[in-house]
Length: 227
Image (tube, rainbow, N blue to C red):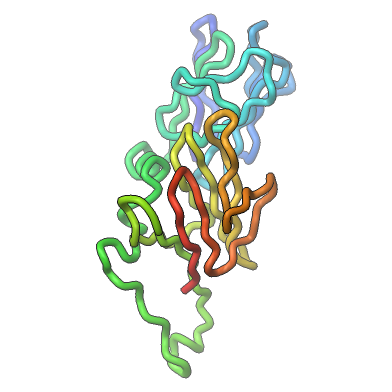
């Protein structure tokens, strides 16, 4: 699990493990991280953690929340991110460290998850009647990039949660559930639109993806495929 290194205005430091789904930050004593600072709102921000991914959300605070010096409303946290709340600094440390996680969130595709990079074909489905076909193994979803310099590459959606996009511009999360795959908006630039599916902006709730759906995110179009 990740953790936050909290340095308060008086210079005192402490660590807090992100071992539950919601960790609240604010001036009131009922917060998980209570900050004795008049510049901090009573309930200022929250960190939401889903598996190994953590997201910071400002709770309409009076003075705002900064990540690496930029004001944010929602932000997917990457290893080493510095959060400023009032006169306090919170540094996020990921359990995985910074290499693969930061690359995935910044570049959309991570090399270890590319199934068909540089024209490598995806595995053919098992023939009917074969042992593999009878095994009933669920088929994984994948995203095929249809535009830009990465066109033709594919991202296998094997994890329970995969974040895609570019921090500070537009970020979404795709979750793998028992009944299929869902996409949800995570954050982006102030005033930016949510990701598009088949040309329509998704709403605040998770949207189920169907084979052939076209996702448009951070200026890149991707097709959702199964198998």
